[in-house]
Image (cartoon, one colour):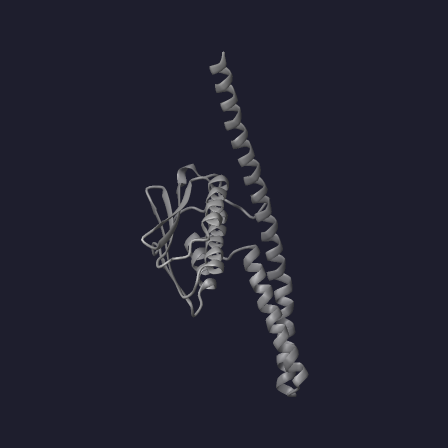
Length: 229
């Protein structure tokens, strides 16, 4: 009797876990759709209006060199750049078409004079888009954010992406790492990735090299994302 009760309780926990995971995946997908809609409003309306205002100020500046107009133009350029960055944050470019391009775009935004990022991936990424791609891109961004915030510069980061026989593989490798006060953050991130995106996600530290990786059987991934209800 005890064994039967134990098995039923275990089954109940497993069912509860997968139901909760589905709820979180649904909620995350809805958030993705809302963010995409907000990004489209920014791109189609605010950025266009900002562009027209810039052109008007540039024309006025050509006709009469006015320091006040020049100052306004500089502020408007900064505003335009901020809007563009916000729209990219809400709805990452290329995500719905090509994950490798979306990752390359994200990595490029993290490059600086102190940070070099090498991205190795197939020349043609012909894999179908999955809903988990948004989680993966967020995971990469969060790894870089944790690293940039806590580790000393300069940094060299190697990112590898491939897909072999329906096995999706992503790896971020950072050599010459001595400070590992980021273990807790990476542990929580890996758990979140496993819960939301499925697959296997973990990190390890060996010979002063930090490696964070994500694996997923694409045939088991859930439905392809869409920005339409």
